[in-house]
Image (cartoon, rainbow, N blue to C red; front, side, top):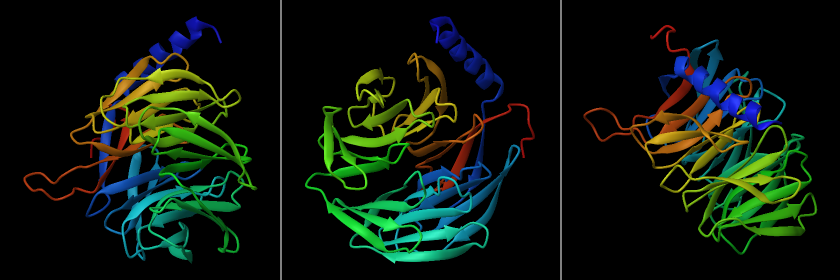
Length: 327
């Protein structure tokens, strides 16, 4: 792709967000929101919270409506994700030592799977067959998504922060407290590579939808972009000052949102590193997620109630038309 067209994309999207920069917030929880994620068709958004619940929203054009609150976990819901191709199923990781699969159509629990520890991270394999969950003791459990039984446990001797399959599902990635990316073959879980990615704790990892890059965010306040095929770092995003907690690629793989305790969410051009936009926040951001088809970014911050020191528990949506209905 020619540089002119790369620069052209930055200008095009800067122009887009000049007229699509409104943020709408929705009441979701009674405590901190830890995780937000869209289902595969973009019609539903789920959020998980310290209040032990999962909130489900539907998106119709530019309006987000709360549909349901899933209850059942006995502790904080730390991370959630949706089935990669079935828009109805989502899975949650909780400190109550269970993983729960939920059905958005029936608003019911499909399965509750007991695990060996307090769960903090979770992901679904690209083929939808397996769920991987990591706990506070750095044990990763692989669960059969159809039988809901544990297939394998893998104990790691380092701090595991986030886990993810690559887009083809034949490699399994973990980010570590030593700033490394560990890459295992899947399903046999043999170590293939260890990349020294950051000088500090490597916190989050995300693969672009196109399969060209993956990105990692670190306690050194840097986001690094990696070539999937070559496993080399091609670019660094360095506009934030605090540890990177959360990152997300846009549906076309051309924009990367990153967030931290900085009071802005940075949106950068993946191919050039240029800044496209920033989203102003009043509080540190815990989680960001681009919509799978539109230039809409869901996020949640450590918001407090006005005049009180209580968690606001809101979920926000950035990228709405600036002149649309303000109710």
